Image (cartoon, rainbow, N blue to C red; front, side, top):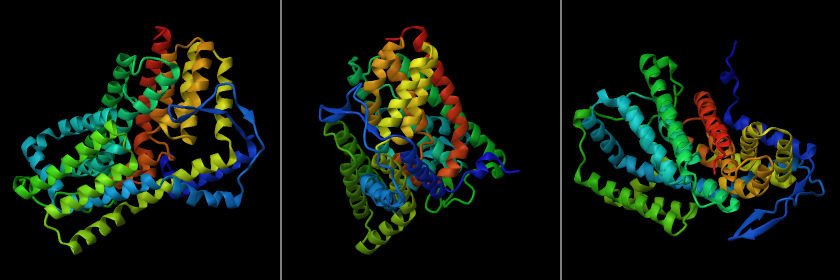
Length: 460
């Protein structure tokens, strides 16, 4: 008899089934929308303004129109994937990544590989906390090289990098997209209540590190337990014994270009409000500069770039494909209907149950509005006053929203950033689900415990 995870369809089939389900919902649910107001340059929902509008169910033609519309909407993320792939392909060709990882592990020693798993998990988690989500996409292949060098596999690499970044970003006490936007809407001091959020975030990262370590020990003991069997490892494995690795002057120059470019990108993100277009531009600049520093001629540079694009193209395709789900919801005008009905459901439950269900409803909403700030602007103007009517503090409502949005990002098929980062690790989405679902349960239990504690102490 097949296990549940063996019944998971191929990601292309899975996403198409979700698109068909969304199309059917446009026929079953009434169309509706909230009125919005412009606040600091962004549209925010006006509480109590929901009204039904003329139904606009999506037909067969609309279902397939959603494909090009989704790709058009996701174009900036798609190009980030391609640009990041080109940059890493050139860095890989210059051997700077392999030599850097080989030298580092030679100095640390394979005897400390368990420590390496824990430290790299927390390192990538802190990048999620402090830097952002898609902003870290260029660093994902480094985790793959590290994982394979210490005897792990590509799934462990995804756990170390994608899993840790997602947990760190989703539960970050200083997440500007969820906590920051939520505090603005709730009129709370920016990033207040940081102690409880920090305890939750680092507890969840601790669980992620333990989970990665447990998986690593399991595959070291029995290779047949690996969930990454048969995945393409070309260009990610060390090609010589550890004792032979060192960094040449040319490697150091290329490494400096890479780190300088990343520093410039982080500065631009925080100081100049750069986003996907500027990040892609930085990646391309790093790629060309690194290629020239590595003394590649035009032909070798071009062939390396095209080879790298071939590797990441399936992941780039999946980003646009996943975005098509949201296009169907918007064509049918049912996103606001889902939000309205979920909010109305909460009014009939006791305080503790309402807090728990508020996080669950945000989890459901996150499948249809995967943008953290977009979801905050769509739901929190409704949830904050509703929470107060139910006896919840504003901080608790924001925490319920953050948990619902952040934890479900670990398996949200409509989240372009998740699909893109898995592509950089060369891990298919269906295999990722097999790996990550047990971890999601542990993180949710800890998160809900923190949420119930916030209710008990009247947090905020």
